[in-house]
Length: 567
Image 1: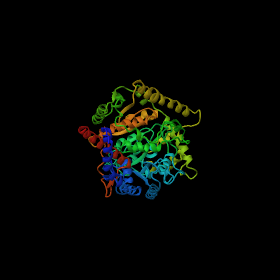
Image 2: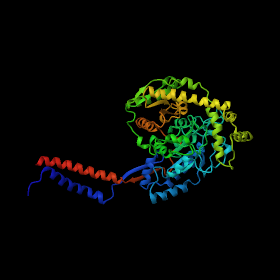
Image 3: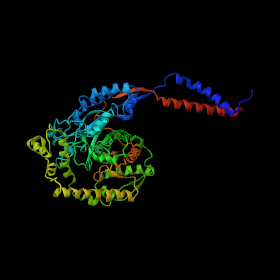
Image 4: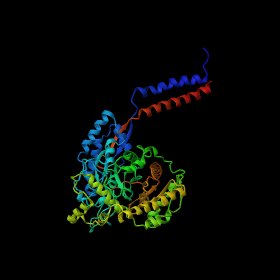
């Protein structure tokens, strides 16, 4: 017989050796790997891994969170309402998973909604005693999206009453219906005071943020008009995204002002808020602003998680105005973040936003005017059984129940009621002029000019310092934990970009988060029994196949080297 050449020998021996090695892998189950699930560090990915391995179900996961609510909610007051049907809904979703698989990565995962987001089966109150027991005739658009994704709506989170539009000076997280919301990093009230928390939970989306931080829920949805996502995310050391106005429908959300309102996700990590953000997007015919998102929104933002996103990025850092009131400790945290960002390959551009002094000195009537207009429209949508039907009726109810409803007054809401909304009125003309000025100073001559002039990918702000200018422009921001002050108060780092640049922000925020890893869980609410689950995880078939291929190649390479020596 003719002698086979080296290549033929290589493949013959490699094939026979690979069969000998891989046959047991194909005939017997893949070797299980040890895995540990902890509720404190539960993420969308770790939950789904435990679901897939059969170590966890939606009902058992929901029960773990309900256990923590029972144990700790009395000290935190993060919920206005806990869904009494949450466990039953989770059990139904478990059965569906068994029959047809998961609907989405959120299938069976509990989510908390701020209590200004409509649910057909639970009250939506904005924290107001005037709306106590008010149940909307249907879900908000985003509530329907979450249910369609298979999420378990765990309940309704506390908030500053009417999303901070009742009285000037009302403490963050306080409402007449629910009292004070407490921050899990320091929930204890001042001794001898009026019960105000030592550490503010931030507002107005206080409960949804604090509940995520305390591991009472893995994900939540807040709303922002000007800082109401960024502030509580900062105060509770979690990640929050304030999206572009128009990315997420506001239909069925108790409003402040349509020109600036938006809902947005909270989570412990950038990855988790990326999952949740994708579940909330979509064009809604009942919210005309969402038409601008057509072709620009995504249902999966996890594709933009990139540890290298800061490499080559140009980041604007306007220090003169935004850093002026910071403490030395806050500056130190921000400077450390800048050093990390620069070490990842970003170029820092230290230039100023030219319109900022004019913008901050301008007194706008936009929020006051739109609050009356938009709240009246929302209350009208509740139908004839609504407990109050206009802002005027809300104010009258509060006056009649002043002992419980007006601890901090209602000056801001009363000023809104005085606005004349009729076309051509002095108030309407002033509002239109003010809205134009807001956009000019914050957007066209403000952020647009700043970002374009210096060719920036994003702008960096310490904590919530850039919230107002971003809100008036309608632009998106992401806040990521940046560290802790000496008294352990959390402090965050915010990236802002132009409209519909959420993919960019997610990449930048993720790169910074993964390089810094600053978040530390609060220690005052320890794990309960059953919150740590050890289980065996079986590699995915694709992983096993990859191992087979790799083994074949490695065996072949080794044989090739041996044959090269022999022949």
